[in-house]
Length: 104
Image: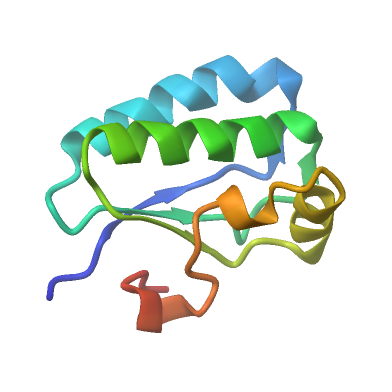
């Protein structure tokens, strides 16, 4: 299996960037092949609940295209925020790195 295409999330994902990031992720999903898309969150440093909404939107958009979606290197603070909102199970899986199809 070929490696998934990767979309690198920026250092900042707050309400101010949410709409532009949503459009960029939509374009990355549209360009992805059947291997799907890996969202690389390793650079993500400043974010709010908009980042959670963005990831949930990406999950829905990928599902609508029947594409796999993985999340790599999600910061602990992001995982904790998702847990607090009770949506951690709804976020893209795959924090295991290359084992999930995401490559570094």
